[in-house]
Length: 220
Picture 1 (tube, rainbow, N blue to C red):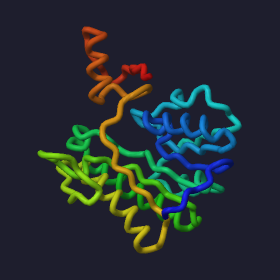
Picture 2: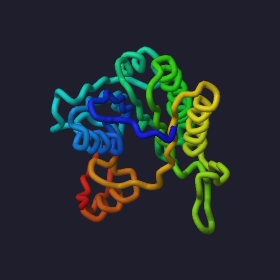
Picture 3: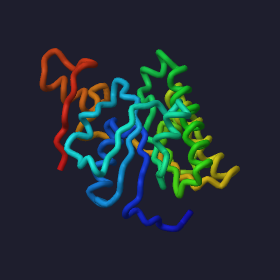
Picture 4: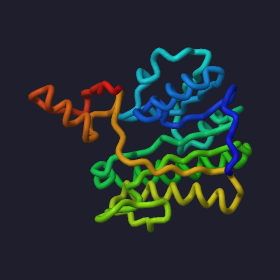
């Protein structure tokens, strides 16, 4: 797992690639590896928009409208791919309190479907995008990779479940898995329920942010 992969000319599946972080990754990857091809699988729920992928060369991008919980959709999207990155997730703490079942289905079962197909196809690498929310509250200092997992919301628990399930596929089946646990992100094309765009939108408009409003944050 310590070897560096050759990414030039690779075919990469990016689930959740029409969302905020996923679409920014697709753009950055193609800018660095223009001979590669990205396959974006996205269910286009409230936070995913095909417009986030506008302007990318058609020869470098295939969009598939589908759900990671659907084995047939996943199999079709992963066909011919060398690598897969899973950005697809239900990802808001308050929403997870209202509808925890949706988070378990996407963030745990969806990871199972992806890992099963990745194992069947012998992918060169499977990257599971997790979150630092799995550590729970860290009152002093900062969490490390060996910090105990203490999720405190259905969202955090579902992400911890997917995180550990992906690792189990590495430990049990030898699937080459990498798990990342990023902290809060902000930037262009972010859905306005998140902290920074919510504050910016509230500052711009007197009526505040709504579920149907989008904002773009300029970054250096």
